[in-house]
Image 1 (cartoon, one colour):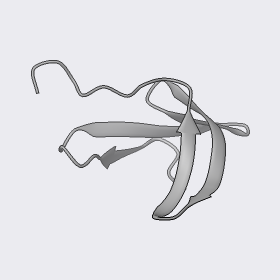
Image 2: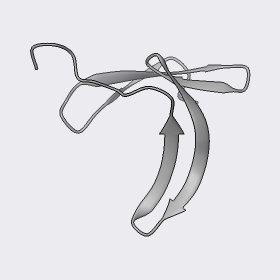
Image 3: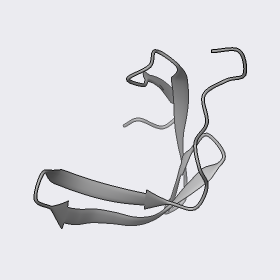
Image 4: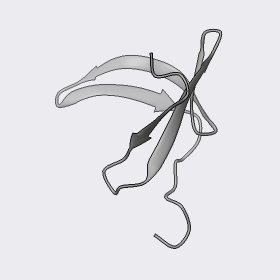
Length: 56
């Protein structure tokens, strides 16, 4: 699983994925909806904007 794993973003920053019970977190954002089909891929909705670390 990805629980506790760090994943690189497109800009090279790292995000951390964690799972607590049935709740999936990406850094401090909670995944609120998953597997929404779009014409160019799959969307997962989070409740917070992810920003790159300051100075990057």
